[in-house]
Amino acid sequence: MLDTLPCTLSLRLLDNALDAIVVIDEDGAIRYQNGAMQALSGYACGEALGQPLAGLLPAAMAEQHHRYVRAYLDSCKESTVLGQVREFAIRHRTGEMVPIGMKAIDLGIHEGKRYFGAFLEDLRARRRMQAEREALLAQLEKQALSDALTGLPNRRAFDAEAALTCARAARSGALTCVGIADIDFFKKVNDRYGHAAGDAVLASVAGLIGQASRATDFVARTGGEEFSLLFPGIGSDIALVVAERIRAAVEREPIVTPDGQQVSVTISIGLAQLAPGAPFAEALARADAALYEAKNGGRNLVCAR
Image (cartoon, rainbow, N blue to C red; front, top):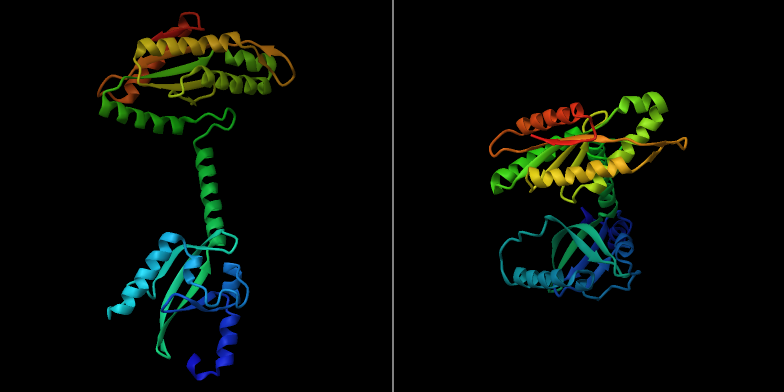
């Protein structure tokens, strides 16, 4: 349809198109760019004319583009690239790499020289929206796997990590232990100091457990005043040492409540080693039984089964 319009009207249409439009000759020189292309590339009207398109492309793509054009011109084969939308980045005059979607077409031969045209879409806004959406999804996923009060992973996260830990242990034969820690007489803390103080105790104990654990251990809040622990790569003898360090860290650290009062609490811990080939639930049940043994033994203890 455009070939039936006067040339000036066709150029006005292209100049005011929303999409960036560029025309190059068979040597790769820019012969036309509309206003949107000027804005996209940073080159003013007429400034880029006659300049190689390669100047807008990353070095590796520039060389690839040159080889492709020559191969296309030297053969009579149908192009597998022309007419297809490709996503890559072009170099803005400032040096910024701008992500774009491009669809190129063969414009045919004019006065003995072949010309190619391309429509370019600026993908920066879409990429920003995509990044924001991915960040939001990651935040929602983190919230779904985190305990809001302590910031620790929650039971859902613990169950997922336990499954991964068990799978790795099954493949490598590595030892793994599981632990359950519980704050002693936590109800008395709430009754005496109030729930705000109880929340402060929970948050502080969570931090102390995390600090006293190894970097490879996994700590989660899985109940009201209950914390679950995974000790990958160690047996019950070393896990007892780590658990005792955790218990001692909580015992010696006074916790300050929101109204300035100091509260001292202790924890009891039950441990169990994961038996090769046995379900994780079995080890968790033994750790729970060991916790009750610690409670019945006077609390502020570490017991293993």
